[in-house]
Image 1 (cartoon, rainbow, N blue to C red):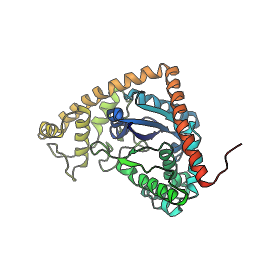
Image 2: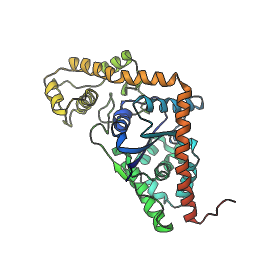
Image 3: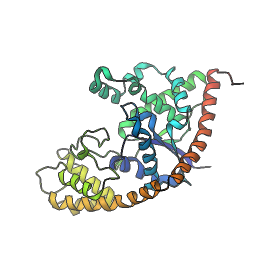
Image 4: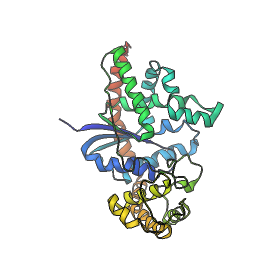
Length: 332
């Protein structure tokens, strides 16, 4: 039997940050030789919030370059850009016509963002989970790596599979979630109760993978802490402490028990210096590899061209099977 297939993607909305790396990219790299990986840059999802046309394409290619810089091996992973394969949009429309609107209105992320955006909320935000379902199901993956905030969307994908297969026959494969506990949810540096996010208006809330050492040092120096001396994991009244300790643990590669012992009597000043040094050292090889990839645009373009061709062949086949099951005629 061949390796199981995994499908995942990250939006191309500006610089990727530590949350993207520790919650997704690093896990992709560590597990890549166990699976057949299809990893895409989600530029269609990106436009659910306004994007500058002058930078959308640049950000998309920068994100693909960071995929490579983080250590993805092309022997194990197929890297491609979502919008380069038209089947994503076409399958979304077909799924739209079998997906009840109330399923989408019940999505927690939609409810939260709709309240913030009010009357300006766009339909793309409502329809985001259906596009996500199309992204996944086109490639018939066995597993989909998801964080806790995306778990409900994968559940909706599975509901769409069951609804489609009940109506039209067993065509779509039911994917399983692949969830890792540690590092799956990296929190903001300015509020330990909120997820680190590219959409946060404060640059101080996140460490971008391409931040230079001086910017990393400044952000860690100014990050939110508490007045308690001594650091500990798991205290719900100290969310920032738990988050920063977790970052140190993940970036240093040390076991949780060792980190807890090392930092239990440490003050915030010495710990911030330790975390800064560890973070700079961990990101340096990624930044160097990224620069090498960006200096060879021909290589990056060839990777994305080959990825598109491989992914598109699978996507077209799945789309044809879906359309045939729904009764569409074959083009002459």
